[in-house]
Image 1 (cartoon, helix red, strand yellow):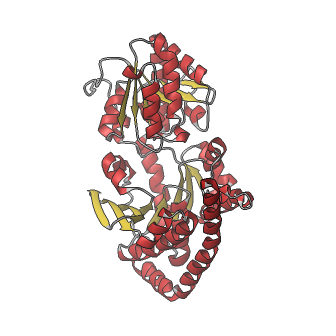
Image 2: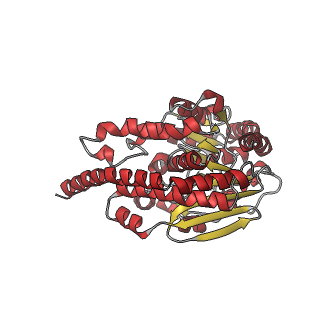
Length: 446
């Protein structure tokens, strides 16, 4: 009965979304004089101004609990002001993180929040995106923002595209994840998830999602892929090849680039330990790490498993730890600050990274052996038994075997870790990445 009611609600939501979309379109048409006024004001006062606004969705409470230090590496010397903007939070607040770096949150209207709570997610999303554009445009004019940057190519990129259409501000899109790959792995699309749950509308969801993902990429000044897989994903969605470029991960703390094995912080644990750092989400496979440790723990009696992170799977992770035969040897720390993560990373016996980005790069930069699934971009820098260890995707037995082998052969794993560090220092060199990023900013601002 509940399933039937949910299906009916989703159908009604999708039906309601059509007039909602038409209503938003009419709102934009009636507001064209205001938009043109904003465009003239932006062109006269902000065009080419070296101030960047990053559009990124975040929950301010989670952001505060994590701390703001991880935002510092996003700064670039070419840009003299940078703000992270989310227009759909629960209140209005401007938070200064450092000189020329701000977190900017804006309150979402109660009506939109109410629609989402009642289960009308498709309708709420349409109103939310319309509202986001309406809030971003006057902010760009008022603060003389010269360029927009979307750090994800889903909703932030769509908002940047719509703002650019209305006031002609240039925008850059970062491809931080291959959503088509994630869809194949999880079976869940990133756009119009409600459509995929309605039998009649299900066939519309994938092409509509790909069209919406590709729309901003076709009009962005630059599309920056974090790795070759992201690059190819953007090209498949329609990004022009002349605007595509590879810009590897740079938003980790510079302390990882400056890692000095001769000056280490105090060791946090007296036992050797395996380390998992990441979001506790299905796509990061934290449960696989616990399962692999369960298999390996008997062969590694001194080793512990340390898990750092938070997310939607937190309750599942806690239950899985509680049911483990070796729960007394598993430390779950939850979300931690950058300094704490760095401290645990540099002393780790190895890093287990089933599907990772910055965490894998940070571990390699610290000379820590990495064990990872052979998926997406991992093989670009993790060369099996040379700069790390690769195992077949979702093969828990092989993951456990690789962990035991690397832990027992200390000499070999140390050599692998050092080669991995040298490779990572070239691939993720912070200064070189900033210089390359500066070129894109310069060209976009022109």
